[in-house]
Length: 393
Image (tube, rainbow, N blue to C red; front, side, top):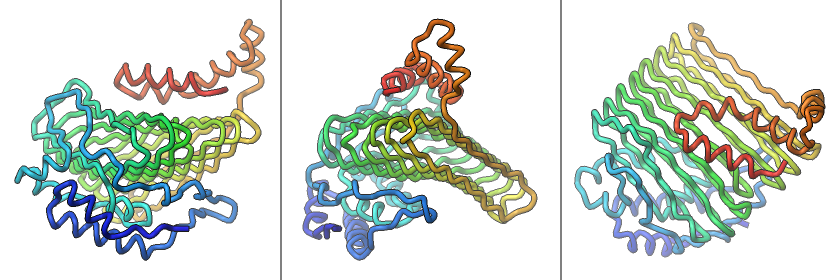
């Protein structure tokens, strides 16, 4: 049963964070709508339904959150907790201008708006080129954490931001990331999620990409008990490009509901969405992909591909690619494959002296290698290979 979050909790949280009145008003409005909104039924067809029984709002303790701890390993950009950024007139005006402006309301995002504990503001001034990756290592030591990340990149910027998420024990985690990229910039945002298998993980991410920009999402879903993720790129400027590369690897009873969207809202925009996943034991995944080309986006090009490797008879995946095309002067394609380990490849490797388990591991590593090679950071590539190698085969 849905818990009704009390107004006094939201007021106490905002007071503890010393927030301005406009931010409290956003919280209270979201709380009111949350308490009136029914739990959504995540049903995508007669037979494709996500079991939401692991989402229990009674597990949420809004006042037991980390509010200002974030580790930054690069000093070339501004990274501040909301509490500090809101004390600066320039940063405060940017937060007020962009905060939650591109996020659609639903049961989960409304709850997040009302009770998020940690806000992280990232500002990249114009004409800054950061050669080293910027690492955001989040402290997830509580049993409840709602994180909001707002990134504003000005014109002619080049940056690569890497987020890592790990924890131990039980956790209810929610994350909303909004990214605004101004003209002629190139920004990559990568996440390696290796949360415990006692974690509920709710993710909403949206990038707003301007003229002649290149923005890439790289998402790696390895942990959690249940992940519900919605990642969207809005190509709002002519000549903008977005790549969305996603990897998932489920085992035991892990459950992933993953949605990837690219909206072409300007001429001559380009997108590429590639998802590769493997599932073992009784793990399940739903992979939804949408490329939408608006009527004003002539000359645009969209592509999406989803490949899944099933490692057990009880693992399940439902790929749901979708195209919405409102302009005829475009190119747009999609595809999806579901396969099992090729017995001939397995026989060949065993004939060369490999044990069956090692042969399967080699095939799985090869399956993911084309994805991993798209990651520019060598340290991230090595870490990802190690994490994949630790998953049961």
